Length: 119
View: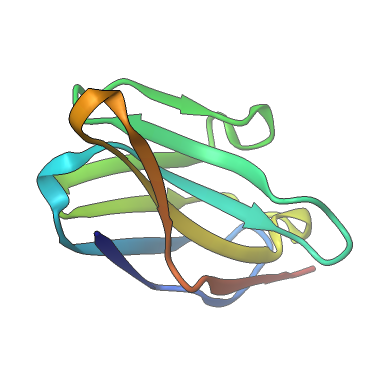
């Protein structure tokens, strides 16, 4: 089991920056992929960025060059968001994928944090 807690959301003007953090506890050494997702009102949840334990990262096209995912230690991953746009407004959730015996995979989610970008 893995528990996730996000922090760092809030209200910012367009062009500003925010940093989201996700703190994991529990069986953190089973985590293989750490990610951030977002869901805007009336839209489906979408992947924003993900990073593996080997450091390989990928980003949604909409945030490339503006957002950076990092993993400073085994139980924390951050999302630095620069040059924010009103269309980045959403509830952001961190996610962890774990790998267990026999290749079994599980996904865990945080409670989400609101990011609002005003124009």
